Image (spheres, rainbow, N blue to C red):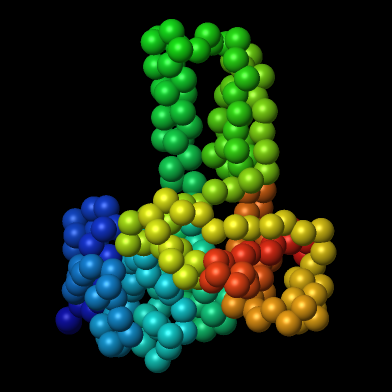
Length: 238
């Protein structure tokens, strides 16, 4: 009896994809590994699985009327994926959220120890500043507190654009290392939309569910006169 087919398309820069997805027991696996620019609607017509990164916008334009039933992103961030659209069509989704937490915290600790060994700081008699007390920042701040470094923290989250891998939507010119602006407001998404309309400001995208520094949030995007992207977000449940 022939094995059922499993057709996978993977981004060439998803580390280890060529080895990890080449064979699944019980399936006749066909793996196609391509550069992100080659991940197109036409390529996915006969694909069952898409493994991508933040350089590929995953939404209706890419997946409508394809055979894809599972999308995985080899990234912690999920801003490039229209999760609501996937869920409405029964397409399963998974990200790498949480996979880098331990290693990033260990890197931060190693950096502090290296600075201490070089005589540049005096542990534990320093103030440790942590920008973004989410999953990773919160754990790093906890380690610092346990070691007596008096951590100071904020609720910001910075997501710089990479070379050739900007996070859509983005500024008209999203250069590597640049960061789009996000403002947190105390009102909900309906009020944000109403205020923008009253000011004659076009909505670029939204409302959409995103992940902020301290948890899930709802975002609305617009642009300033120079084409820079402005994100206005609320942690309030609508």
